Image 1 (tube, rainbow, N blue to C red):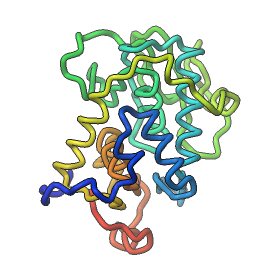
Image 2 (image 1 turned 180 degrees about the vertical axis):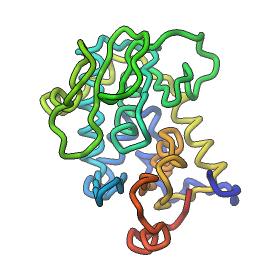
Image 3 (image 1 turned 90 degrees about the vertical axis):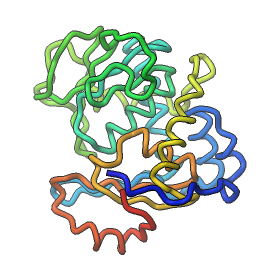
Length: 249
């Protein structure tokens, strides 16, 4: 869980474009413009897997995923996308992509994870693993979590294979065609403030303790995150030193 709050940091040290970002697409653009090669998301998974996403690479993954959700799954602003996935870098990318499409990700099965005034509704899309839950949804997308996976084996019948499809999607997503809810970034920033994250903070913690909204808030403060899977078998203190983390989730 997040540490007890410290003094709420000023955003004076945040690059102007990042500070002025009004939604997820403009934030990712601003991060890429400010420092495209800077690591923003680092993932440690089972079996020694390590994935590092720079600002530019993160924005590219999100753009491709948003393009897939909108043009292959017909996701529209206000829809709910249920992410029935374990915490991982792919789950984070899909949450950011859902917000970029103007929709609302749900990563624990609740409709409207952040915006609690949404009317309860069945998900327009269910994103799950090959052996994950399958429930009522307009479309099912199957995901294989390992970074090197290029296809989902044993996907549910009729499910879209995310791994096979996403790499061929457009590198640029036209978010201007989607209605963005500006509260998303505001609420994420509030959550980062409650957790005491200062500008530029590099936050390390178990992936369970770094949900997408908290990661989004850290990014809006020009920070970065190191997400560690529960089954990674890693020593968090050693990783904190190795990754030069400045805060713990």
